[in-house]
Length: 235
Image (cartoon, rainbow, N blue to C red; front, side):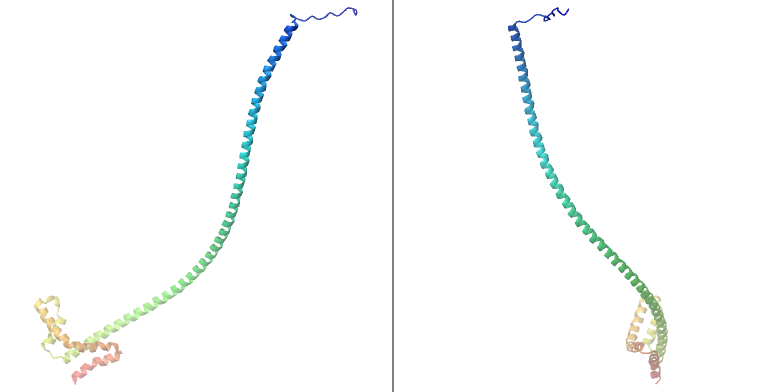
């Protein structure tokens, strides 16, 4: 068995000739070159697109970097401005709080002073009311005394007139005019009495003025002056 020669394996199918095999290999090489060329062009196009994308990415990164720098600068400016504004506002708030505290103290002082003034004024008003009440009482008393004095003076004047003046037509007309009811007189009687009373009034005016001056003197002097016409008439 060891001596038997091994059988050579024969190729399956039809064998090619060398020329045919060469042509087939050339065709395969051409096909591979075409595929390689297509793939090369596709790779070049992809590489160009990649480079374009890289350029775009670089430009975008530069823009983003510039924007980031601008944003950082703006944020820094705003932060500094905010900090400065915050410090100014804090100072103003502190000043306002100080002013508010001072104003509150001033208001409390003013309120306290006003309360004291009101209490003082209330006391003054009470004193003024008491003085006014006292003055009113004095005025009423003086009015009563003056009224009684006037009644006494009128009575004395009437007595003096009766003792000093004659019973003539003028006196009787004046007395009638003073005692009569004016509403019950007609126009002619009223005119006649008024005319005679006016004439009588002119004669008595000076004497009445002298009598009224007595009010500026003490009451005892007034009584003496009032008593004087009666004494003079009797003489």
